[in-house]
Image 1 (cartoon, rainbow, N blue to C red):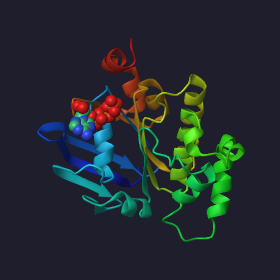
Image 2 (image 1 turned 90 degrees about the horizontal axis):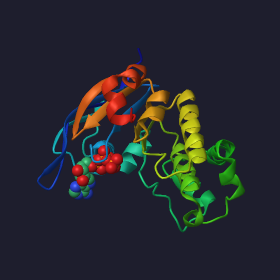
Image 3 (image 1 turned 90 degrees about the vertical axis):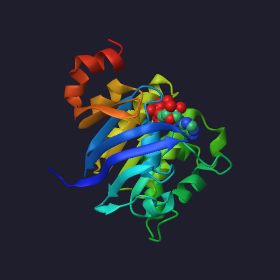
Length: 237
Ligand code: ATP
């Protein structure tokens, strides 16, 4: 088995007096694709935000690449290879597609940025066609592609994806899951938060199920997919 690259122990996060994450343990090994599923409000997004320093941690530890990263900001983490694609995408709406991709490489100083942009255009030909268009004028699916492309420009070792399929048409959902699989096959470690439990577990090596701020089940994705409790609660069966 490969080494653990991301490890969360006893994570607690509160908003005011309300505990959104209540003692979560989770680990991701190098090269793995791990899906975190659960109902609305289960605490999945909060967990990702706590990992990347966007939400203060009440208690617990986040380890990345062998070090504690509690309290480190998103910029430092991107430089260390840990990059999040947020829910709602967060693209720079008043910049063009090409400019957004350039921004994704802001932590890099090497000379391969242009060739990496070409690689992103290879994955998402639509972005190439529209490279001079303002990101804010693109469809939701196109913005999701751009957000993922921009994250790839940082050459991440670990990618945290928050609900990449949310609000997209079925064709676009297919495309996004295809790309997540491709990125994973290229060796990028992925922690995928998804409402679409069937698709997310279908791709993943392992999965975690969250409910009311706690991890209620974990195991090989294949086992979770066939677990009657998961099927009843999250696959609509
Ligand atoms: P969803 O799929 O709907 O995004 P989630 O599993 O990602 O759900 P979170 O967004 O992490 O869940 O929310 C967990 C809990 O924390 C919810 O009860 C939510 O209402 C609450 N919460 C989230 N963000 C805030 C905030 N900024 N202020 C107060 N409460 C919040």
